[in-house]
Length: 159
Length: 453
Image (cartoon, rainbow over all chains, first blue to last red; front, side, top):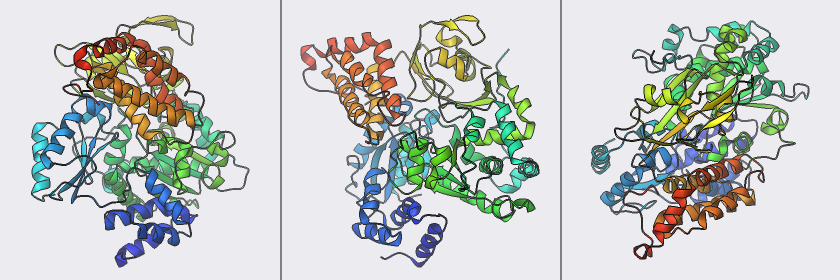
């Protein structure tokens, strides 16, 4: 499978951290998804073989754990928290207006390919809700101004 | 007198000059406790933890010393320590602060604990949604290994132990210790049945394993530092040490605050520490220990006898914030995640929100929970979409009543308790929803103007 040489090395190092190879399945899925954007059939078979498992052993993880995906997403990944504390402070409104801005529903790639919005469960930052993860970065206390900022950053390709 | 925080775990967190690198930690006396611990006998360290009365900070509040006592030391198999950093209980965001702002404190706590139980290897299972936290921990571990605080022959003591950071991938059930172990073994995180799979005997790779919360492991460092006896004098008997309270919802100053156990009441926390409710609003309800715990209703009275035989009668604001008091009030202090709701909150919508969470997170292994959490979600969601019926309150209670106690893990209780307590305490709102739904304009499903769900 096409992975950078560095990633191949990293994968071997990660496998060596565990007394049983199978333990490396979540870490490998993370590494492959980070490089390829999603988990393809080829990736499932490759990881299974690498860990001396059957492909079903990997597929059943991909279908269970919410963070793994079978399809590509937009250039940016926006995960808005849906759970109670954020909802009490307006998370539904935030998520609605983001979907309208980018003209897309949840879990879809926006028509311009800019973003995929997910409405996820608790991100464990309840005191500063509503919160969202823009790729790996936590954005807190999202109000209308911050919503506009997020939209601007995604559109302009800023980090 | 205004109530004062007592910061032990969060002592340096948010100090302007405090950074996450090793040099800063060492300047603040870092790894001195590990040095001291390595010169003691492991059994003595375990005894100190026992003496301290430390109770787990993850949610169940079980004695940490006891948990370590149960470890099967005679099996000849290696012992593992897992730090449960899968913080996912809605309303809780304390471990996030430690991991992101003081990672070395956690690493020191883990290493002291590892030495005490003579663990061969430690794992930090960190939730997938903390990518930055995982990177920070990796970096901190590299620094600690370079200075020989982690790894082989630690500080020349002859004791070796390494820590591996393992990322989860978005599943709440991985916070359940046996589910976590399955996940760490590379499987779906289906919790194991107990007995026989008590982690202390048959844990990771079927070896004896201690699974401790982030805050608990940090506390171990302070127990060893000041001695179990001294630690046990902080807080109240059987509720020792401090607790980090995560406050969210309808208060002016939500956030994380550390207090001695039982030092303040719910009222002091909300009105003095958190700046009170929003102007013109009244308190309606509080979920006191993460969203799984039973809701408390403003206006309720809690009567009973404390363990030492004293009679008490509390209002919601009078409840002291410790493990035992919350239990006598009919709920649990859980993970310390306190969600405050004022009188603008529609309790049916709030429950619908909570139910949607549990329906999404049920692992699906046990039928009562898999089916029950989905049905509770469908019913409460329908109710909040203008299609409530008068019989729904009873129906919800009936479904919830068939989950708790019939599942492999405590998720069954976690998803049933919110429904049971919301419907029981706010029944009039659930019925009123039905009466409103019965009017002609409510025949079409429609969402509230600012829906919670």
